[in-house]
Amino acid sequence: MRRFLAFLLFFCFSVDLPLWAATADRGMVAAEHELAAQAGVDMFRQGGNAVDAAVAAVFAIGVVNPSSCGIGGGGFALIHDGKTHALHVVDFRETAPAAASPNMYVRDGKVDPRLSLRGALAVGVPGEVRGLTRLLHDFGTLPLSAVLAPAVRYAAEGFPVGSHLAEELRANTEDIRRWADLATVYLKPNGEPYAEGETLVQRDLASTLRAIAAGGEETFYAGEIARRIAATVAEQHGLLTAADLAGYRTRMRVPLVMKYRGVTLAAAPPPTGGGIVLEILKVLEGYDLGFAGPRSISTLHRVAQAEAFAFRDRARYYGDPTFTDVPVSRLLSAAHAGQIRGEIARGTQPNSAAVSERGGTAHTSVIDDQGNAVAVSSTINTAFGSMVLVPGTGIVLNNEMDDFSAAPGVANVYGLVGNRANSIQPGKRPLSSISPVLVLRGHAPVLAVGGSGGPRIITATVQTLLNVIDFGMPLEAAVAAPRIHDQAIPDRLFYEPELDPAIGAGLRRLGHKLVEAQGLGAVAAVQVVDHHFVGVADPRKGGAAEGW
Image 1: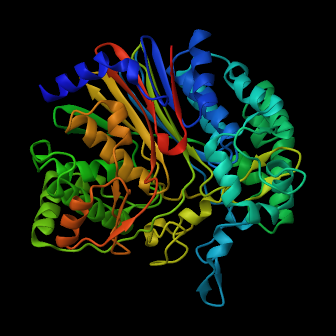
Image 2: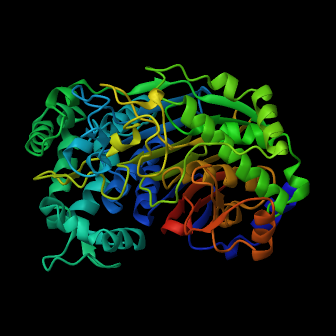
Image 3: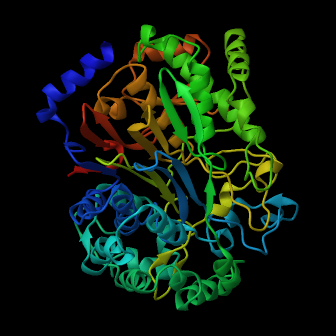
């Protein structure tokens, strides 16, 4: 009854929706930029389905938020097929080059963290173009040229720089200046960053996207574009070769599926963070969170502890399932969840990994009136990835090699510590915090959700799901609500400043060491309510939802 009343109130007052939320009758796109959402809706208008809309939006977001993602990166897509009711995962995560080795970042017996963050040695084999074209081929209806058209237009004609890109340019200006090819595109002739509202044109990127639209994915992986990528990396002493590009393949994976409070949750499996999302929820299912309420000390304490213990398991067990056995069934079992609840009750402190950080990645959620639903995340990792821009192509290459464990027990830029399961090996996919999730009632998708922001993706996605499922919040309130984030090491509970000081004091009394942090993840979500669509893109990142 509480959830029903929340939904009813939402629609009674839908005229008061914030600018980053929308309602519609036939389809909805939630993305991290208004132009990306519009690109998706354009596909609906051309007769396309949710997959066509999602692919168009993801290509577009790589143009308008190039600090976060683009065709030099990779990602994951979770799909519900409205015709067959089948669930699919397309894994287009970057892979380690064939010449990669476990000690490639070790110098004089110590890991040099700079080598996996900036420069050509940080670059993994990009998977985005193969991934998005496979997604379109297998589940879409429109030609590649149609879904790429908005991205080509934004790159060729330019677009007003949004708030997120303006901030990323400002914060990274000094680094960008050190990379001449990158600076030529993303800094003005006077060396200053583009400000919000100023027009950014990327003509070389437009030419690259046109070539892909005309020639398909092989244009990127085996043609002149591939040759230029390989030559640039070689000139800068990286490992990625033309053979690595030609040999890259996507993987189709089986989604993880779990019941939670009467609904079905589907998540992407390892190497994503989807299993961690489900593990946290499996632990929390043993508590009556709805009775305690979303802003109670007991609820937040249990959420924080469940997060920390799940990240402990991530550090211990998770890796590319092609290379290591990840015991997902055991980690998602009722017995394991009960064991963690017992440890929480005894006050046990897990040991794992975490810091608050600025993360890349962009997430797009789409649902249409044919029952198709897509949650897709793409990334080049940290801001502007490796900062290697391939001259003449406009492609910014990723620095996803930092998502491997450079050595057992050594943290990456996000503070995430791994073990041998996530060690560097040729052809291996590094762990990812990307966590697309679909919620279904019966065979019908009712919510598509995911986020951006490094490991905060996992905790932001969990808390959005709790807010909708356990607490019956309208979607815009569920996404905007203040968040917490706990990964166990360092021993800190990060919280957004909107948290009630009295609740913070109560959490301190329970032993939490609180640290204020801004923007703990950015979520994009679409919900089906009473045969209507509600879309919300997180105001923390200037996103937008557009309906049709």
